[in-house]
Image (cartoon, rainbow, N blue to C red):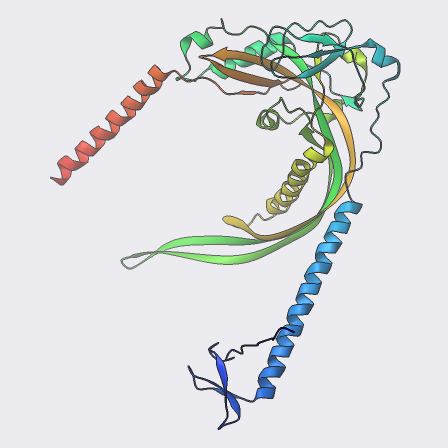
Length: 377
């Protein structure tokens, strides 16, 4: 049977206690305090009891949170996989270069991949996938996309001239990008530290006084259609950047909106997107609370608690114009909101222009430092 050894520490200074036979007490070598054995044993028994209760409470809280999360999982029960007669009107394509899976109506010919620009896409048999609940029709045409791209070039002094001349723009494609749309509610509470500062002169001193305040906010926030793109080929940052879409114009899905456009086939599951949806819901809820803290010059969230009540998940196709091109051996992907015209995408940098620009800045800094040194000397 293993022996159990308990080392007692002094309540006054946390130094080790040992029993002294002459006094019949536990004594501390560091501060000289003396304690009855029964007193120390009772204190340690109470501490151990509190530790056990705290551990049990933590386990109970974790179990409740896990059960709550399981009970409030995103509801995907209404998603529909039955295409009915519409399925016979669909075609499928796959890109052998980047692996993109595309679908379109039978009248649309896919000539190149909208993601990597590969000119060859392989036709295949349309097979089972979830049928979208909604579609947001394209509102802008390709001419608007071309103008948006030209405007994107403007003011970019480091952009290679040959790139912006247009000879690298091969094709712009309209693509319906798959999105999961999450509904739910958040119970949020947060504490904010707010500050108000004022400055004044006191004799030879410039004084800044800052008052600190505690602002508490709480509320229930209902959210609808939090979008998370369900295509691994589409950079998440691009899709976040071209938001928002006007969901008032969502239509029940119909293949009548597909002619002339491609639709990306979702390849990121609801479970894989749920984390992003949770974070967006939580950040939105905290943002609403923070927006209500208005009377202070600064505000910082110092603690918060958000409980999510997850609701239904719907599947929608949203309109995006895509341009992919190569420059100096690198791929460049642009995306434009097909409803609002907002465009995003990285641009190449001319090394010659960069070093000329950098040299100009370095020369200016050197000149300023030289002037300062002259004054000092």
